[in-house]
Length: 493
Image (cartoon, rainbow, N blue to C red):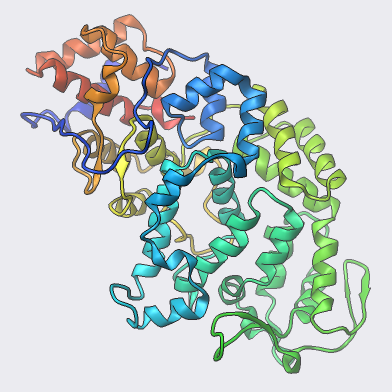
């Protein structure tokens, strides 16, 4: 999809007032091997699409690895994420003290009992670490699944004590089980203090049952809205979940079952008769829910929607759902089906704001500490852990096809190195492929960002337009790079 002159003229108005564009070198340490050592080439459209579904925007070295070993081996390599050396990314996070803290420690520093931390710094550090992992981690498919499950088990971080409990949930629920067993993932989420607080289950007691968590456990976490449950099932599950709570004193913020708040009567959920057994009652229901055919179909549909298309093929969903049932919810096995059999059928998806920002940074080999990116994501509508309702950020193209101005502003601020503590060096990036001819360098930029060069006539017209404004060759390259990132073509993956 070439960038038209009309599109460029709309975007270039934002930068024509600049006498020069910054080309200073990055101010942060580079990861080993971060700059490419060999030129990149255009990619077949199917390969470019596949790479941009299983990464947050393929870097040059990832493109080279994909070309070397092929789609199937690349996917297997990413699924076996624990064998991928990610020490350089982990080193970038080494100063984030809150990521490894227990809930009671986090609550303590939120009261300024720890130098340099307060209530707002805890969620911001989690947001910052999440972005940096997505930019720098070599375990890209794993990080995509962390994002997927963070949406699926959404928690609004600003509700109640979520500002510190979500850090523990991210570590012990989402990241721990992102490519493991769906059963273990739901089990961990159900025992997560952050989830209990967010969906009000700490207020669920025998004298005043609260149905919030019970409803979302079935509607959003397992069966799906059309999964075959009734309002009566919600009420009965809520009774099973009475007493599931969060500690308020010693080991503040840990999960606890309060037997004195539990409804000890007999219950019936989805036809299953449940005899009084305390905490085991709801756990018995969870075991049933995670193995239910409706759950298999619901999860397979959501995964296919994320990776393949807004309206994924039913045949693919059915095969993935059967694999889910056969493997007792093994996430890797389900992903193999969806990726290996579905990517050939993939349809363009509009980038969510985070994917737009991340793909820009990754493809340009930008350096960042991610702190300045929160404000841009907020403007675009996807500040991390900030979706107030339990359904998570939308995953369809239609939901995001608006509010373009913040994307354009981000593109030009990025290229002009105006984002605080975020730098790129386009000249150094192009050094490995430059012939010294401007037209060739423009082809390299568009091949890097869009997978292939734009049509020659469009490219030459774009160059002429920028040069007519008095831009040097260096300025022309940067203006064109910004225009490509802001273009309609780059908004899709």
